[in-house]
Image (cartoon, rainbow, N blue to C red; front, side, top):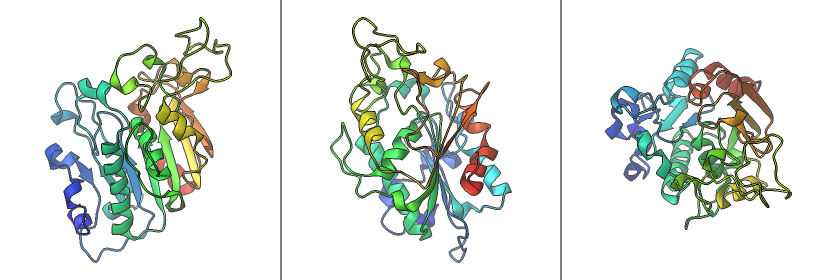
Length: 295
């Protein structure tokens, strides 16, 4: 990826050499290589990495990265100069409860999107995101002030995004965060799913939901994200598994699929896939969404 940093991005450490060859992916092999396809940017989730680093990340690592997806796209004629990923955070799953939608992460990933656009000179890109990468990725495109933070990501990038694919994202929070003390569940920029009203506390996962109010109050970050009228791409696809072992409860939060991105073009619901398998085992579907705009 070294060629991507010649325009002022060297300090961002998009390579992530600390993760070896798994820290990042993408770029020309030769400066004369032509970019023929819309670049695809992959954004991983909490405790994951750009490529599979599970074998080197220790016993608490779940980091399988985008290796399966990238290999599939390569088999369909894509080149490395048309596929991009960088790692954010670390791969220690024991620290997952501390990760939030913070300015440091959002600013860095926003600069990555801008770097890819500048490097490829693309008029359109595609984004495939998984888990926390979905709620990060949506804000990267929306731009603007970060709720719960003190930073401005700049203007919207919606006009540059052809397709946004969101896999197992907690767009309306996580029921497991009700009553939780983890930082990642906080009410400002975490995955807080909202209080119920009256005596119906902790009934987030019940279907139909039991609360006598019109709507729960999600975390400030998620509320701002979901209320933003910007359509983040020409095509938006949401996909999730009813057997997700992290989101659980058939993906429902107050009776609504938390992985369903507002204004989605279409949705795909899997069964018998874990949270990570929703990313790892669906490369063909990801390709079809991006290239064929089918699901």
